[in-house]
Length: 279
Figure 1: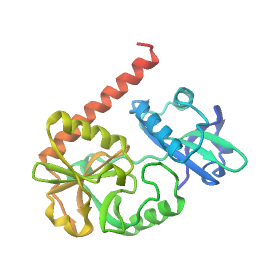
Figure 2: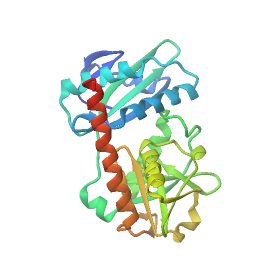
Figure 3: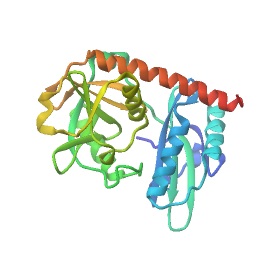
Figure 4: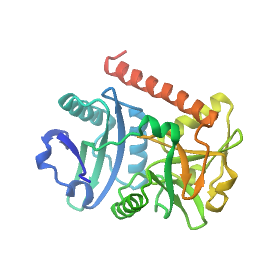
């Protein structure tokens, strides 16, 4: 899969044609990144992504090559040039021994079809764990291995299982299981603190929905009624199966969470627009 899409990208604050895109600026050395969803041409939860990017940089003991104001400018410059409305945009901080660079560019984006929100998606277990789950750092080898396994198994997502046989998170998402009226998810110290996950947890507090911060043992999947993944692209997406274990995809609690999350997205779009207009 090609790293970028579109006709333009931004390198160190300058708009460039993608004919000059050099993947060494992403994969050589060490890279920290964020992926932001554009909806109606507006970045969703932009400020949250900037906070997490800063956290990742701090955890890796690096310096910020660009701040949130500069990255906002780069995102707007790219979106105004390309006029894309529904797509993901990637921000990469790349560090090598000789230089530090920052890039902003569009990536191929696949969003679930309406049928998948109704019938759910197939997932598989993948036995691996991130070296630092709190920082969004590119791990090309792990990503390639997971991508191949997903292709071979015709699955949508891989759920990572650690050395203790505990399901922590998806390869590009967070995960929740449902038993009765209680949500189960791994504690913060075992996962990347996903922005969608953050807002789902806020909704749970506001709605009085019980949450148990406990990772699910891969041998105990049969104890749960339903499950869903959440993230930038899938939002709140039901799981129909994990390997050979099948789940209910019409769970009312899950549907309620998705509806309230979409409202949060709309509020985010309005907030970003108001900030641009100085309101």
